[in-house]
Amino acid sequence: MSIENNKQQPHDQQSARDFIEKLNDDICQAVYISLDNICGRIGQQTDPLKDFWTAEMRQAYETKEYYFRKRPRATLRRLIHQRHRENRRRFCHQMAIGEYTKAISKLSRIRKHRTLRPTFSTPQGPQHAVDMMASHLENIFSGQLLREVQRNNIHNPILPFEIECPITAEDIQETIRNLPTKKAPGVDHLRNEILQPIQHLLAPLLLSLFRLCWMWSYTSQSWRVAQVVPIYKKGSTNEPSNYRPISLTFIFRKVLERCIQYRLQTNGYPLDIAQGGFRESRGAIDQAPCFAEICHILSSHYHTKPILAFLDIKSAYDTVNRNYIWEVLQPYISPPLLGLLHNLFDEVQIEVLLSNATSRRFHPKTGVLQGSILSPYLYSVYINQLPVYLHYQAIEDDTHHLYSAPLLNCLFYADDMVLIANRSTMVDLLRKCEEHSIQMGYRWNPSKCDILDNQPQTIEYAIYGQVLPQATTFTYIGIPFKPDGHLDPEKLVQSNIFKAMSTMNVLPSIGVSPSGFSKFLWSRFYAQIVRPQMEYGIAINCFNHTQLKSLEETQDKCICKI
Image (cartoon, rainbow, N blue to C red; front, top):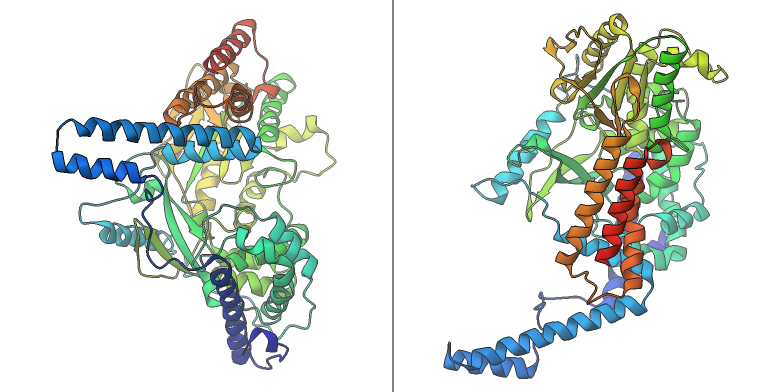
């Protein structure tokens, strides 16, 4: 079956699946052939220093080898340094005359690549390490925390669906134009930069493919292979649990997910007002003042000093009970969309990539893919029952903020959660959180939770019988808070200054110096990279003269380095 001859429609489920697989393979093969014809194929890896060595340098090197450690070695060293300087001047000149946005992006990539990023390893080698990581992830995805094995309770529909697919060719082209570039590819090795120049040719083909997927609630098997790359978080580098499993997926899956994302979020299950993560006009800088305002209203209008409990969910995305999500979404979205989501997430296979080694594939019984466009919303649907369970009274949208503040005893930003209550109520809320986690099949991480309680006689708060640590300050979604929910401008200033100066001190190590780049490019880099680090959270804080002076002095130091 060729791409040109794809108008024949299948009539049964098996032939439809074969048709979808063949059409997907044909489209991918056409893209690969086009790339081979336009860009050519690289048979063997070329020497990266091939263009660096000149004939004079090679002659000097051969002479140096002949005389070994004798005087001609200085000639070779001089020519190498001279060549380095020439390349450096050429690079700085190209950066200066080009678009500054591309120059800033280039410097950011250089800085990122120069930063040491730990990778999981074992003395037995990469294959042992990747197998160990795969076993760890398989255990997390096993569903062992669920009370019963996850099963599909959704009524099996009669296929194909007669509901028309809402995706259009214009949607596909717009999605390809807006998808981020310079992202790691999945098993297809295709990135969005490859699709953008041929989007007008791909759109009709992908539209036919997506309509078939919609009708039969089936996607190609390659779309459901997630290559997981462990990204280090913090803690010991020898512990697999200290790495975040980021999934790399098929480029056509990303296009399909983006096409259905808006309809899913618009028509899907409405989220609680306490959830602020991944919602329009509900960024971190919006959530932080909401949290501070609630605490201020409790203190000033209700004369209550709130106790704050910042809770952390262990492996939040990886322990999600997907069957619960499908049951919640079923009354809100169309059967074809629900079947498509079910196929994309329930029938996925995972393999771990680490140090050029690949693990065996396994099927995750729980969790949503970290890296999927739809995962943040699906997780919000999953955890949305918790704020509803914690609220003592339903909160209407038109309720005045002075009356709704006492009812908002919790706030969520994706999986970051804070409880707001007095002492007696806090104990009850923690008990409810514990009960909900056991019921839903996830677990809190008591060692990463914190309690802010500045009252004279402190008491112990616990989850699963483990006492939660108490602190005098806590950084919530990047903004430091003091007890009673007050913003901590002093710690914010110190944190922002440290980040800004650390970035400025790293720049010379990547070759950014006054002797190389122009002052204009330097100032652009400072304005777009360094200064935002100093400005984060400033708009929602009030600073005294000393704190403002510290920020100004830091800016002066940065400008002096330019």
